[in-house]
Image (cartoon, rainbow, N blue to C red; front, side, top):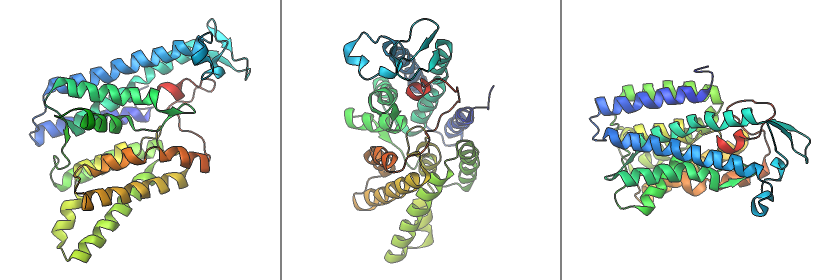
Length: 313
């Protein structure tokens, strides 16, 4: 049912932001680029999702069998894992692959909002890398890079025509209330408000201290903090429950680290897209924090008997 899944809210709000950006901010983004981003994300998710699904059942493939021993013995409609004794339903796992298209759509919309390029191929490369990162960079069936962030950084590194425009939303106050309201609804559903609050509080405190130390006016501080891209990052990217640390204390430490690194990169290395580089650099820290503080892993849906969502979402 629509809006039962928190991702339904994300899709609705990100689509709204995209329409507002084009309509009220006069973005020069071409509709074809949006279609390329979304289509590439969906296609990559389907191909790699079903590919992983079928490979997981082929325990006769030696190289893959060692990685997917928990799925060995899966034959027919219902099958039993001989290691755990658990039974899995292939219709349920097939549904997990299809349901994961919501996450891919969110990634495509996020790339359309944040990434700019001159060529279709650049957008396609970013979208492909974003989704592929979920399947390649995994540990214990959890991906630790945010897909959209990985796609943006990949495009910046591998192409010559990609860029991020942090100031594309201007400084209008009504955008602030819109982002906070929409983001608050999503965060309430996924329970990751602590990550956003910690990141924004620490980053704002650092900017306030620097502004006071340099003797700048309040207008300068507002200019540095009133960024639509910063809010989108804090509300919709840094809070991805599938790639960030599981335990609350881990998420707080992680958010503080990203805020500090963002501050340093922006003010001492003069990187306008510092938030994206900070998240990319510190994403592997998730593995360490999950090891130090063990907590249940977030799942978009509760199937009760299928681990497949851990791979495909």
